[in-house]
Length: 193
Image 1 (tube, rainbow, N blue to C red):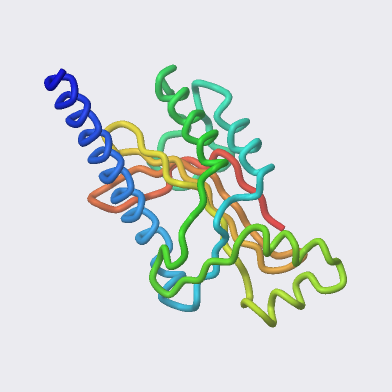
Image 2 (cartoon, rainbow, N blue to C red):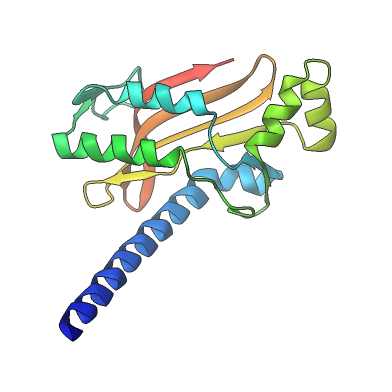
């Protein structure tokens, strides 16, 4: 019985350590990804993505071979082939993220505005952006949790920003670590307003 308790505690410790390493890697990625934006102005972000956005992200992972919808740079691959396990892992991570939320002060020079607050502001067509601009700032960002594959050499990540009725951009892309820095190699899904 004592061995079973020790084994259970050891497994819990390993699970906690793995989760902490994943969170550290995610924090490093986010800090690096948004460093130019957080250095220039107060970075306003939501605690989660719009619920319908997850459906679009899940749809973009439908195939085992992922092709970009625009080519980012010369010398980058036109496609990436996922194993069944990798695809299942990405889909599982995206499904789990529906319930996750970001904490306040996740990044330097940042402020969290709850998704429910933003949804409430934009339900009222009379105040929408005018209210948001006067109370919060020029724009807000939403983003997924980074999903790492292949020994943390690839990252699947979605980010967007909204800045007005016809102002915004979103991109779900695959990033590759190159000499310690992340570079976008394939855009899987993007939109512009």
